Length: 148
Image 1 (tube, one colour):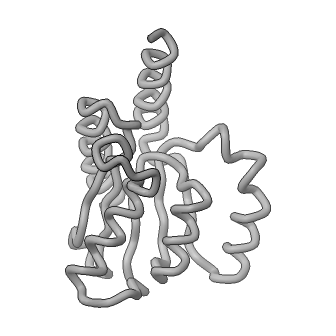
Image 2 (image 1 turned 180 degrees about the horizontal axis):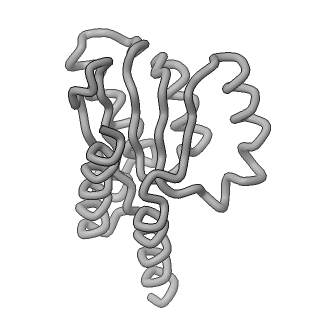
Protein backbone atom coordinates (compact mmCIF):
# COMPACT_ATOMS: atom_id res chain seq x y z
CA UNK A 1 0.00 0.00 0.00
CA UNK A 2 2.87 2.39 0.65
CA UNK A 3 3.56 2.73 -3.08
CA UNK A 4 -0.03 3.56 -4.01
CA UNK A 5 -0.35 6.00 -1.12
CA UNK A 6 2.91 7.71 -2.04
CA UNK A 7 1.79 7.93 -5.68
CA UNK A 8 -1.36 9.74 -4.54
CA UNK A 9 0.77 12.09 -2.44
CA UNK A 10 2.91 12.74 -5.54
CA UNK A 11 -0.24 13.57 -7.56
CA UNK A 12 -1.15 16.09 -4.86
CA UNK A 13 2.36 17.57 -4.98
CA UNK A 14 2.03 17.99 -8.74
CA UNK A 15 -1.26 19.83 -8.18
CA UNK A 16 0.50 22.13 -5.70
CA UNK A 17 3.24 22.81 -8.25
CA UNK A 18 0.63 23.70 -10.88
CA UNK A 19 -0.75 26.26 -8.41
CA UNK A 20 2.75 27.70 -7.86
CA UNK A 21 3.05 26.18 -4.39
CA UNK A 22 6.04 24.22 -3.14
CA UNK A 23 5.21 20.73 -4.45
CA UNK A 24 4.43 18.72 -1.36
CA UNK A 25 1.50 16.34 -1.04
CA UNK A 26 0.31 14.39 1.98
CA UNK A 27 -2.26 11.75 2.83
CA UNK A 28 -3.29 10.21 6.14
CA UNK A 29 -4.60 6.66 6.44
CA UNK A 30 -6.28 4.77 9.24
CA UNK A 31 -5.10 1.45 10.67
CA UNK A 32 -6.72 -0.37 7.72
CA UNK A 33 -4.85 1.87 5.23
CA UNK A 34 -8.08 3.65 4.21
CA UNK A 35 -7.43 7.24 3.17
CA UNK A 36 -8.88 9.61 5.76
CA UNK A 37 -7.53 12.93 4.48
CA UNK A 38 -5.30 14.44 1.85
CA UNK A 39 -3.78 17.84 1.24
CA UNK A 40 -1.04 19.73 -0.56
CA UNK A 41 0.97 22.81 0.34
CA UNK A 42 -1.22 25.90 0.21
CA UNK A 43 0.96 28.54 1.86
CA UNK A 44 0.65 31.09 -0.95
CA UNK A 45 -3.04 30.44 -1.68
CA UNK A 46 -4.00 30.90 1.98
CA UNK A 47 -1.36 33.52 2.86
CA UNK A 48 -0.57 31.24 5.76
CA UNK A 49 2.99 30.09 6.54
CA UNK A 50 1.57 27.11 8.46
CA UNK A 51 -0.45 25.77 5.51
CA UNK A 52 1.94 22.90 4.87
CA UNK A 53 0.50 19.70 3.41
CA UNK A 54 1.02 17.77 6.65
CA UNK A 55 -0.69 20.40 8.83
CA UNK A 56 -3.67 20.66 6.49
CA UNK A 57 -4.03 16.87 6.26
CA UNK A 58 -3.86 16.52 10.06
CA UNK A 59 -6.52 19.22 10.50
CA UNK A 60 -8.82 17.50 8.01
CA UNK A 61 -8.29 14.06 9.58
CA UNK A 62 -8.99 15.36 13.09
CA UNK A 63 -12.17 17.10 11.93
CA UNK A 64 -13.34 14.01 10.05
CA UNK A 65 -12.60 11.66 12.96
CA UNK A 66 -13.85 14.19 15.57
CA UNK A 67 -10.72 13.83 17.66
CA UNK A 68 -7.38 15.49 18.32
CA UNK A 69 -5.48 12.20 18.48
CA UNK A 70 -4.72 9.98 15.49
CA UNK A 71 -2.91 7.18 17.33
CA UNK A 72 -3.35 4.34 14.83
CA UNK A 73 -2.90 6.45 11.71
CA UNK A 74 -0.12 6.74 9.15
CA UNK A 75 1.06 9.82 7.26
CA UNK A 76 2.54 9.71 3.75
CA UNK A 77 4.26 12.85 2.49
CA UNK A 78 6.48 13.60 -0.49
CA UNK A 79 9.09 15.58 1.49
CA UNK A 80 10.68 14.97 4.87
CA UNK A 81 8.62 16.93 7.42
CA UNK A 82 10.01 20.19 8.78
CA UNK A 83 10.20 20.84 12.53
CA UNK A 84 6.77 22.53 12.59
CA UNK A 85 5.11 19.61 10.82
CA UNK A 86 6.99 17.07 12.88
CA UNK A 87 5.73 18.72 16.07
CA UNK A 88 2.16 18.58 14.71
CA UNK A 89 2.62 14.91 13.82
CA UNK A 90 3.86 14.16 17.32
CA UNK A 91 1.10 16.17 18.99
CA UNK A 92 -1.56 14.43 16.90
CA UNK A 93 -0.26 11.01 17.95
CA UNK A 94 0.37 9.71 14.43
CA UNK A 95 2.55 6.64 14.82
CA UNK A 96 3.92 6.04 11.33
CA UNK A 97 5.43 8.55 8.90
CA UNK A 98 6.60 7.63 5.42
CA UNK A 99 8.20 10.29 3.24
CA UNK A 100 9.69 10.52 -0.24
CA UNK A 101 12.52 13.02 -0.58
CA UNK A 102 14.99 13.82 2.14
CA UNK A 103 15.25 17.54 2.83
CA UNK A 104 18.74 18.95 2.38
CA UNK A 105 17.89 21.85 4.67
CA UNK A 106 16.92 19.50 7.51
CA UNK A 107 20.00 17.28 7.57
CA UNK A 108 21.79 19.40 10.14
CA UNK A 109 18.98 21.36 11.77
CA UNK A 110 16.63 18.53 12.60
CA UNK A 111 19.00 15.63 13.22
CA UNK A 112 18.93 15.94 17.02
CA UNK A 113 15.20 16.74 17.00
CA UNK A 114 14.36 13.65 14.94
CA UNK A 115 16.49 11.38 17.12
CA UNK A 116 14.93 12.83 20.27
CA UNK A 117 11.37 12.32 19.07
CA UNK A 118 12.09 8.86 17.69
CA UNK A 119 13.40 7.77 21.07
CA UNK A 120 10.67 9.49 23.06
CA UNK A 121 7.71 8.38 20.97
CA UNK A 122 8.97 5.18 19.30
CA UNK A 123 7.41 6.23 16.02
CA UNK A 124 8.08 4.62 12.67
CA UNK A 125 9.76 7.39 10.65
CA UNK A 126 11.04 6.23 7.26
CA UNK A 127 12.09 8.03 4.11
CA UNK A 128 13.09 7.29 0.56
CA UNK A 129 9.75 6.13 -0.86
CA UNK A 130 9.65 7.15 -4.55
CA UNK A 131 12.59 9.33 -3.57
CA UNK A 132 13.82 10.18 -7.05
CA UNK A 133 10.43 11.37 -8.26
CA UNK A 134 9.72 13.36 -5.08
CA UNK A 135 13.19 14.89 -5.08
CA UNK A 136 12.96 15.88 -8.75
CA UNK A 137 9.64 17.65 -8.16
CA UNK A 138 11.21 19.86 -5.50
CA UNK A 139 14.45 20.46 -7.40
CA UNK A 140 12.66 21.41 -10.64
CA UNK A 141 10.30 23.75 -8.78
CA UNK A 142 13.11 25.68 -7.12
CA UNK A 143 15.28 25.66 -10.24
CA UNK A 144 12.51 27.54 -12.07
CA UNK A 145 11.91 29.85 -9.08
CA UNK A 146 15.57 30.82 -8.88
CA UNK A 147 15.64 31.78 -12.55
CA UNK A 148 12.78 34.26 -12.10
